[in-house]
Length: 345
Ligand SMILES: NC(=O)c1ccc[n+]([C@@H]2O[C@H](COP(=O)([O-])OP(=O)(O)OC[C@H]3O[C@@H](n4cnc5c(N)ncnc54)[C@H](O)[C@@H]3O)[C@@H](O)[C@H]2O)c1
Ligand SMILES: O=C(O)[C@H](O)[C@H](O)COP(=O)(O)O
Picture 1: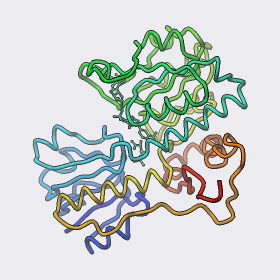
Picture 2: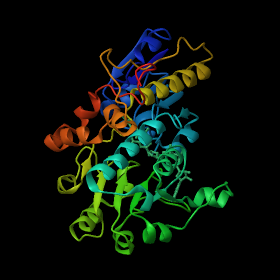
Picture 3: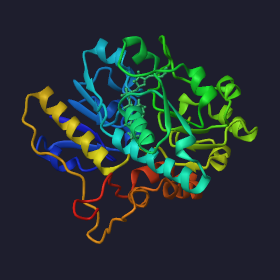
């Protein structure tokens, strides 16, 4: 069985070597029709667009993306072509929640936000948004949730309209998939009109997909003081990002909110078990993330510990110093764990 795999998916090689001796590791953005032609399966990340152009006439019968988002998969084509595909729901949701926790702690410490008298608006409350809601509520913030698809399904919980988010929130954070059509599109849901309606000069956080926020409109909103600050992890036109927006953003990171080692290992395990199920073979092993170095000494204060485990300002400094290295900063990402090892916390 030939499997073509994105070469930046960490920790997966040993498991793959126990499944096949015909594995080809390639740069995600360079996986092309010639590579797919005689492959049985592809394991990709967001950098490989999986559509008719890539897969037509190929032998591929199974595609897995080691990510939550799947806007790079042409689901309609996959169905037409009879190619099974899977994503990894929730795999790195705790990692994005860790990113948000650290951002909120930094807002408190460095920007004077008082959580008890602040309101956060969560737009999209699925795997990520629900964890972020817990984090924010745990810090004492008032939490408003806008999620029309869930509200229409009659899910439990209190949901508000987008107008409530625009009128009442000091922080607004987006956790929606990128959806271009249908009843609840998210493409440019934060556009110039949205920024024009904001009442509280909020901090805007986008860790969902770049095109959920109109980046030019956000830059204007920063310039004209409609928003206080911006925290941007996901950008339009990655890796060619808007450098003026990057300079203006308080925190600018290269799409790494979900890059904890825990999240990566979760994705690997989900992909391997999906692949094994599809081809009727046994799962060869469970993949664990690497441990933090032995000399890691956990801070006593919970906020200090959160920032010790992950401080988004570090990623932001690296990107701002070298925006042309956007993809390299992602590909060579340092070890990040979501919690301290037992006995060291
Ligand atoms: N920056 C990163 O590293 C990173 C990591 C993980 C996920 N993501 C992105 O975050 C997105 C959300 O992840 P998730 O795991 O929470 O997905 P999810 O599917 O579990 O939840 C998405 C939620 O958004 C809601 N939604 C859909 N359309 C909406 C709309 N128009 N308005 C308000 N809510 C709407 C859905 O009902 C759902 O509850 C992913 O699709 C992915 O694009 C980014
Ligand atoms: O959707 C996701 O899971 C995240 O955006 C993911 O972390 C993106 O990572 P990539 O595949 O681009 O490395």
